[in-house]
Amino acid sequence: MSQRRKFIKQSLLGSALFLPGVAASCAQTNEQKTPSGEKPLILSTWNHGLPANQDAWAKLNETGSILDAVEAGVRNTELDMENLSVGLQGLPDREGITTLDASIMTGDGSCGSVAFVRQIKHPISLARAVMEKTPHVMLAGEGARQFAIAQGFPLEEEKLSTKAQEAYDQWRITSQYKPVINIENHDTIGMIGIDAAGKLAGSCTTSGLAYKMHGRIGDSPIIGAGLFVDDEVGAATATGLGESIIRICGSFLIVELMRQGRTPQEACEEAVRRLIAKNKGIEDIQAGFLAINKYGEVGAFAVHPGFNYAKATAEGNVLIDSGSHFSK
Ligand code: ASP
Image (tube, rainbow, N blue to C red):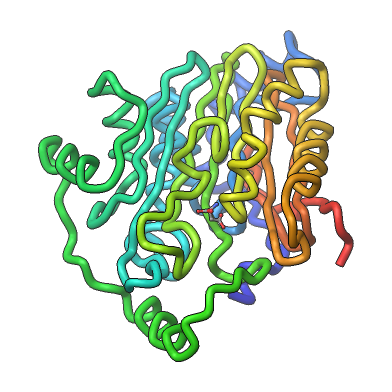
């Protein structure tokens, strides 16, 4: 956990991520675009965003698809046994059951999501299957699981990871639900990316709040709350207390503010102001937003300090501390 909050810089120069083909296409594209943006560009929440960006970048180079990239990137986090807020190793709900939420979207309005789903190792890929193989946008619970079986997704055994079991046993001593800012239960991965040609995509996946009520669904699978993407404008994603983000349709709000002319940074700051205005008990609520516009300009902002994000470009993959509304 302490690792997570450290400021880390990981240069990709000389690594597999720094691929000349991508760098060249980036340079060509930048000649025609606004000076301050960068393309291709991949952003993701928290420091698990560093390895996720790395996988996303490799996939972008392999297939040229920004959709493939944002799916591959967060699949990395879904398997990260150290992460207790994404994937089946995540902390369970108050009944001791781990349930997952995920969404995926491209800039042409295509989107898919799954909510309150059990036993699926890669909910992000299930969300993509909902998008590509059904007439629907969202499947939840048992229906999502049945769809997964029909699509050939293996069902995993329902067993908490050692770390999650230990944490749950500890929690059961008092069984109190009290969100604590920036502890392990606020580490959803949201990823947004733009390719050299300006196509956008995003993904978001989480086990949600630790010890939530059984059946609770957060912002991450709600299109417009945890994720929103529009090629005409840009993309945004969110992390933090899902209820506070749903109340303001956070990601959609940011994209619409950018449509009206705000920079990604201005839009994220306005969304945080709105969230603070609409949520009581803000001292106990953390939420953070990430955004990019169609020029490849970046914004990030959070309610409280501690939020960070990983930014991958042709020049490297770095972890950056976000600004916040409150300073302490
Ligand atoms: N946004 C997620 C949820 O509310 C959790 C988090 O990012 O803290 O389910």
